[in-house]
Each structure stands twice: as structure tokens, then as C-alpha cells.
Image (cartoon, rainbow, N blue to C red; front, side, top):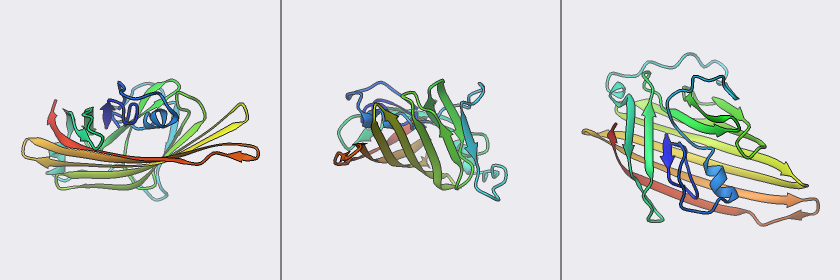
Amino acid sequence: MKRTHGLLGMLVAGLAVVAACGADTDTSRFARLLATSTPDTKAPAATSTQAAGAGAAPAPSRSSAKLTGTWNGRPRCDDGDQVESTFRVAASGNPIHEYETKDGARSVELISVGQTIRFIPREGGVSTMVVDALSVSGETIRYTLRISHEKTSGGTLSQRRGRLAVTAAAQGARLDFGFTLEESGTLSQPGLVLPPSESTTACRGPLQRA
């Protein structure tokens, strides 16, 4: 999924990436880890693994195949902002999630719970995304990603954690689309740990086929 606004600065990746309303804080940069676009044909700058025993992407049901393609719209968030968003579905019926690396945007088809993607994001450090839930059934797609990021710079350790839940359901010719991003972060140095920062952003609205 791609999002062009700035979920707390940019987000979610069309869960892909975007223009921004807010300041470029650690939180907004974390939001950039989220995204969805068409598969990248470049050599991957990240590793992706499936849970033990997972096989190839499951074949979609006839009805879930109706979601295949690209959907665009401007969902409204609970902070009042509307965000340019794009949601893409592979021919298999599975969602495609895009993320930013130090070498540019990459994307991955989400195919199984436990699937893990590790990469070096644009700001450095190491980021990990794990598929905690994935449901492709009927005319509805749901998935949840657990995201973490760690970076050390000048003796300061930055740690961020997040949970992204995405839902897309066919409603006639439209797609009822929404996501919720929960984030928390801490900064620490030897002998000093700053109070954690936490935030939750939810956005929902209709998308139209591109």
C-alpha cells in the first residue's frame, strides 16, 4: 500500500511514500518504513524470508481476484488530514507492500504469516518488518505488520517499534480502505533513557480503481 501525505510526516507506504504535512521527526521517518507499490525489478537491497513450512503464494479465490490491480483515493485520518493513498494487489490476490531502503523504494508481496523483511532504511540503522496476520478471503484483504528499527549514532541509541494494520474490502465499484499505525520510540545514552514517545494514527476512506 502506498500513501502520499505524511502519516505523521509521510507514510505508509503507498504503505508508499509521500509528501508531508508534518516535521521530519523520528516518528515521521519511521512512517516511511511503511508502503505498497508494484514489484521492483532492481536487485533487492533487503532480505525476505517466510515462516518455516510456508509454500508459494496461495491462489486467490475468484472473488478476491477482483481486487487485483491498483486503487487510488484520499482517505481521511483521525487528525482531519486527507492523504493521497494507493493500494495495490498482485495477480495472486495478495497485497503488495512497499518500503524505503538506502538505495530507494522496494516492494514485496505478502504471502504468509511470519514472513520477515530486513533492510537498511534511508536514515541508516537496521529495520525489520514481520507479517503478524494476513487474510485474503472473499472480497476482503487484511494484514498486520510488526515493525522495528534500531540505529546508533554518536553514542545515542534510537529504538522504534510499530504495528500497522491494513484492511481493504470491495464495496461495489469502490474499495473501502483503512489503516491504523501505532508507534512508539525511545532514545537512550549510557546512564540516560528519555521517556518513550507514543502515537496512533487511523485513516479510512474509499478508493477507486486506477
